[in-house]
Image (cartoon, rainbow, N blue to C red; front, side):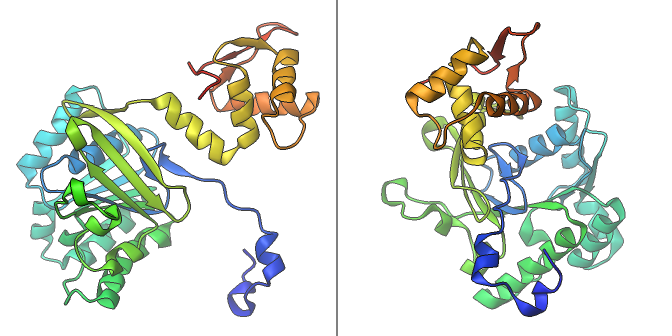
Length: 316
């Protein structure tokens, strides 16, 4: 954005003519980019989810993980378990409760100092209450205290995941799940995304509500500290549908199989899968993008069939 807009603002036409940023995710279907608050009731497994995500991403991203409710022994035990499961996140740095105690620093100051030293791309704080300033619980004070935590991440351009407790809800009379987060609404207002972790009827579920992404629901499988997305293909399709409708339509037209370019074009034309007609050259561009995303494989020879790498149905 032009820096002059900070003083002059933007006209209506400037706003509507500005392209909408593409959805970004820290971990597809699980954590959107920006500042996310992950909530769940005590001992339900939200810390295990955050640890798994950090270990999954820690080979590619610099991650600062503040396990401020863990003793050293607890931190060793939990992360050693993930190591035994094959994780080796060499860009992950962990701080635990004893580090904070030994520093004799106020929690928020300690968090700021250590995060700045590591220059992370992702910060995880377990839990928000362990480092945010205590206050009377009013809306403005809660909002301000959470903002002071996220300011460090915003300054470095890092994504931030804050773990927070939720109250137990009566599923038979549940209203808005976002109201389950403990504290005033000022806590939720200070973050970009609210993610509710629960386990209804034995399943493991995430429900997300965000400013930069559409509301989402993802089901997970959990086995001895390791999570997998229950229907990863569907998550990929949902993200693609929102981010790139023409690519989504093309992938559906391939019907999970191997298809010639001409046949894909005919299916898109016959079924009106896209809002605007797609030319042959445009389809090549779309197919190349799908290949870059690892969703299809190009033909082994000129004029051959493009192969979908997702097992999907055209009815999806």
